[in-house]
Image (cartoon, rainbow, N blue to C red; front, side, top):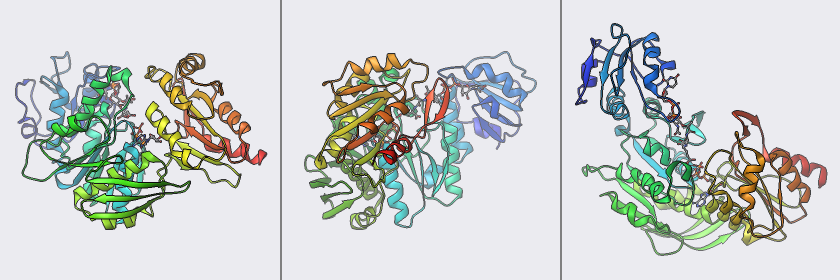
Length: 487
Ligand SMILES: CC(=O)N[C@H]1[C@@H](OP(=O)(O)OP(=O)(O)OC[C@H]2O[C@@H](n3ccc(=O)[nH]c3=O)[C@H](O)[C@@H]2O)O[C@H](CO)[C@@H](O)[C@@H]1O[C@H](C)C(=O)N[C@@H](C)C(=O)N[C@H](CCC(=O)O)C(=O)O
Ligand SMILES: Nc1ncnc2c1ncn2[C@@H]1O[C@H](COP(=O)(O)OP(=O)(O)OP(=O)(O)O)[C@@H](O)[C@H]1O
């Protein structure tokens, strides 16, 4: 692409050296630079991309965009100095990739819990309706059924643009993003033209990064302001009326709000909910009338997630009647209150709950069909938000027996993690076992007929990170192995 056209939108720039006529690639990682690339120096949390400018030139970069003058080989590459290289990158990559999001229906879902569940529901409902859909989130990049790995829940700006291009080239007209507060604050989605943005809920998490819940809440709110101010095309914010951030997020966008609720009247409201151990039933009140809904997803929180997904697709123009028909066939989301198949006379669920609120909701989800005890295993990650640990254990105390363990201990000692968790326990029916495999075995050895067992925190993940190495780990496989020898 012509370099001068590409740089045209940037004001306040200084150019040192001679710009090449064209550039062929955009990169933010010097290690991925190919000949004729434009390389953006981004200041990161662990290192500074400015330190890799010369390395990028050695790999063939012919333009370097930086926030300061650099001592690099300007005979080989022109140096363009801008005020903010992340913002320059947003403009330039959107031009370079020709604004792919403008040609698609783009959904964004944010919130502390439920993002993966709601985005997957939207994706599956679209696909069950015969539409093509792509989804980017914690589980990876799912391009109409083909899964590619991704490093983050919300990918960096260039990866995001490339996913959009890939989807567009594959004639996929719906793109769904799981949107993290980290991604919003770092501008990873700048340039994405959202059509429908959805909020699940906000509760304690990631305070190591955000400091306060207010900051965390406003970071999430960036998604609603990201709908923009161009009122020439309808766009929608789908908001949870049961959450205290509803009003604040409504003010952040001029576009229409579609509300949903499990507790009060709303555009999409769930009434007379029946929780069964293999499905959930409720009456839906919607703008298109009242419907009886059946879903294979379990637990109160999943009713809220189903409402969010239905409302988001209604915003796109889908009929509620048809969505409800499709919903019946959608299986539980991988690792989210997912029942483990076993012939043993007890129930085992795998759930991704790793916040206090999710733990409470996870245990509440099985209360309606409790016959004997609820046994709950939960761990927490090392070297991340420590302030949530006691409250996680406090919520876990709702179960009759609790095993406190670890969930990716990284560089932190078992004792340090367990000591923080233990502070929150509300009864004495618990064990502290740092090694997660041993913890799972212990819980299964305790199990009796009719018990309900929940393994929380790992969800779909099949590894445990110790120091910086990923070791294979599956709560499900260990549990089934022990069950095999006991029942
Ligand atoms: C703390 C944080 O947000 N880190 C993210 C950040 O990395 P960073 O700031 O550490 O980057 P860096 O390593 O310092 O590098 C700075 C620059 O130098 C460049 N570089 C670096 C080395 C080199 O040899 N050459 C080179 O050019 C890098 O490409 C980069 O442009 O930018 C990277 C690219 O976007 C992200 O992958 C990375 O996410 C890390 C892996 C991470 O764990 N982030 C978590 C906190 C996160 O973002 N989580 C949310 C989900 C939260 C939830 O559960 O809801 C997410 O969206 O994933
Ligand atoms: N609407 C909800 N309200 C409260 N808890 C929920 C809700 N939806 C899911 N959960 C709980 O949170 C866990 C994670 O769900 P999900 O993966 O959908 O959330 P997420 O926002 O994508 O989380 P992450 O960003 O950490 O992947 C579930 O296993 C469940 O325990």
